[in-house]
Image 1 (tube, rainbow, N blue to C red):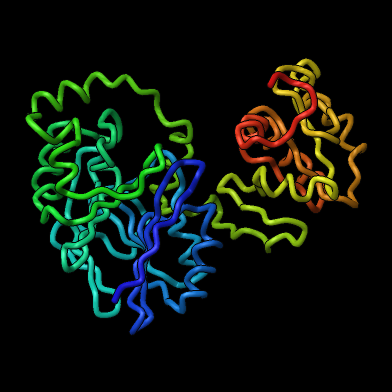
Image 2 (cartoon, rainbow, N blue to C red):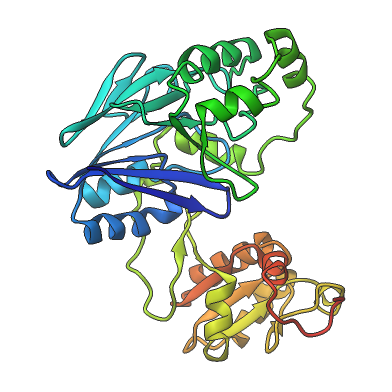
Length: 357
């Protein structure tokens, strides 16, 4: 018997995977995300599982791992690739290693190519495999940074993953279309990069001409993940706020999701830090929001009531994150930034004043 949960981070479209042995109460967690360490720890408690270790498939460029934070919360070990270059691993893994939990185990398969330190994990009976970014559903991870190599990825996928039994289920590190799982048989037949009549030359030519921009969080995520997600100075997040369900980010501030803000909007101060023309422009603004442009904050922060929680807002969440940080440093006890800003608020279908429908 196996406890299995597929967990999701909407910001980076990252999947994390919890595997547990209910008889012995031991578990592993693959590719945890920093912002979800509280969620993951709560799930472990509810399922009655002890987290033995977190396992990284590679040094990620689009999110920060929750490995270090979960170690502080649960005492779990941090496992990752010996070839990945990360500092702070409790155990460095390579081809052929085994990671045990209860009476089960995962086998380690080296699958470099997306990065030079990619690993995939295969359940003991070869019914499930966790492929990270080496093999995605009808696709694969890019090969144009972090020592990526199309040739190495081609051989990794064919030799280590598509060689598994045809019925084996494959769980990727990401999906951007809402898909959750595939199989070896499906990818052999339908993956346009690896399946059908494709050969290594076809694949290499395709990958060398993708022309993708670098991930938005790459400059933050890669250095952080090379330290297994340990923040500068090793500071732990503060206690959970009582006024709303918030998420503590690696950048060191609280974020609130649009749904949560919509539910509690009447009880908080919403401060929009965009320019006046943006406030009344196509995106509109949230009802009840007060406009204080970011460049006016030093002179106008005193207008904000310290007795009520504050949510800062901008177009994407970038400027408002700076405002939230400034307000917190000025001593305001209850501040959060709207994750994704007006872009995410509008895309989620929540109401605005003004703007263009």
